[in-house]
Image (cartoon, rainbow, N blue to C red):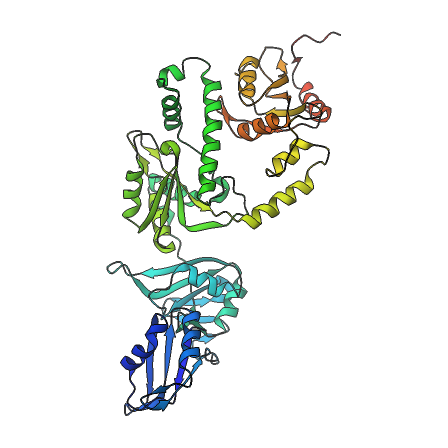
Length: 497
């Protein structure tokens, strides 16, 4: 507990004297002397600290010491036992002028008398012992921009809210009051214009983690970055073998972005289990005429920006904000904001925090599922695993989702950019178009793993390549058999009958 009780005080002791005595041990959030109706001291007081460590230090140092020749007792104060529900409250139901709020239905609580310094992280840590918390919202005074001392906590399961409501709570050294809260009101979309409804749908989709692509980059900015590095104009870059050049460049830039994100403690390829930051945002789809300073200026209008980290080529920018509440406001207000002369939408994503222990556990789990006789799969699922310099046999990859307008020559150029090819096969239709998949064998484990890692998800003629380890003849026969009934096959030479 971060609250202490001081007993056997001198009659003359007041709040000012107590603050002077206890403030060296930590930040005081609450201090009052209990008094009789006539104003005389009852000779005990409560003092609230911002954290439990400060309260513990004050108990250790000041208990059984003297204040004005009076030996005082300093003990950790416990939260008072919550009284039975009064009129207007029953079993987690609160009656207000606005209607009935049932914590057993909404799973939402409203908090009062919070310390001004309380942030969303403190609330989440305090209430997660009752059950998973899906959201917290601290009410901010728009004039002072400080907390009003009130907040909302939303639990994933309503029964956890009822459990929390049944107990008393001390946060930041202060006894807080809880009531059941009504569910947030939903706006009437029928009164919105078509453009307003579209904007609302985009904002709602911006919170859907399943739609996020961490390594997404603006194509124009990526082209400019590649041209600058090669020392050529954008026109020259796109004049010959444009699809191969762009796919190769995108793969290498994606690798650089991944390394950059990892250096800042952010997962480049998060999944549904990844822990998302509440204060760090990834800004994507940034055009070449928008600088990191422009991004910082945009966020500074809505939140206190702690730091801004542009990636190589400024294709992606990390923005760190001071508190979760203002970060949430900035995210909502800036998502899909038009950027630059081209007015492309700004894509925002909460950064996935790197958890080394969790990452190792995930890698081990994937390794258990990997075929034991497939060294490439082991290489891809556990990047720290050591592999021999040369494979005992050539390793084969299967490449899917190849655009039909691509040709075998371009595919070979792309695949050979990341290692030494032994063979490559791209089955064709009777009209000469590729059938959308192919196979490639590399001469070394390193080359095969590098190609799979670099090319998986890369755009080639506007389509994401899917590159995986092939299980020798099994994958090849399966793919060829799947398409044989729907189209005539032409793979190099016409089949003889």
